[in-house]
Length: 129
Image (cartoon, rainbow, N blue to C red; front, top):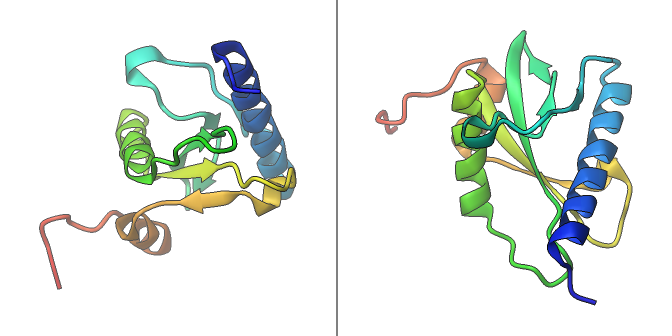
């Protein structure tokens, strides 16, 4: 059965709740929770995640089986939302079909995001090695 708007929204909400609860539990941080929508100035789907005292934006995606995975679009969205939240970087957490274990879901970002996570600051985009 194909997803309709209501079932997609329900699946997204369930996925966001699953991930938020897992992060709060495993990071032992009760400030981590699903974030209310902010319209045009969206700041990601999960609030309260921090690394080195800086915000980390998580954009969650739960595409239905057979639906298109749009990593370039999703990472752009996470980057915009990280800017809206004045966060270090934004990562995409997306559904891995075949498992409901929150710890086995996919996480996607850019190499710039990886450098930011390791060093604590974003590399200059115009500086190439």
